[in-house]
Image 1 (cartoon, rainbow, N blue to C red):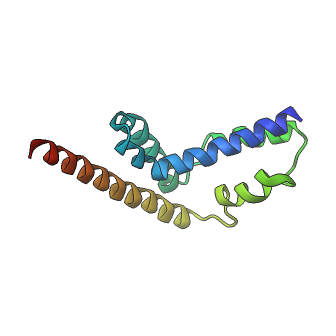
Image 2 (image 1 turned 30 degrees about the vertical axis):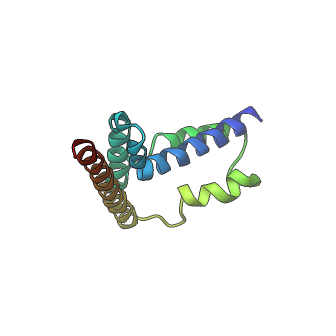
Image 3 (image 1 turned 180 degrees about the vertical axis):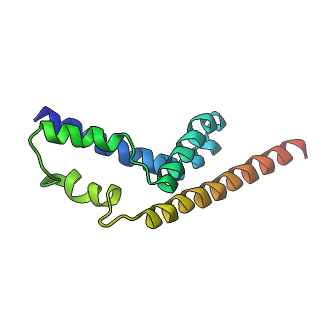
Length: 127
């Protein structure tokens, strides 16, 4: 039972990392210093996609599921709703490259927005 819980926790962390890598740049409006955490995460997510690599969280989760005696993702909210988002069926390298491009484009847009907001805020302080 503990291994199944650990596997689900890894899955949730995996999903949160994906969300952070994709949209975490918006947190820079709140705390600019998060740049040093977010940019490496976004680069990692893009590299995983472009290179077709497997995130280290995937084998960790699978190891926990194996230790729990589970062969697949059956039962429960986490298994039913989150796994298809993180592990799409028939994921190809071309699809991963498109996902990587999506990560880069979204983050360039977010960083541009954050930069614009900061410049607007600074110009108001001066004027």
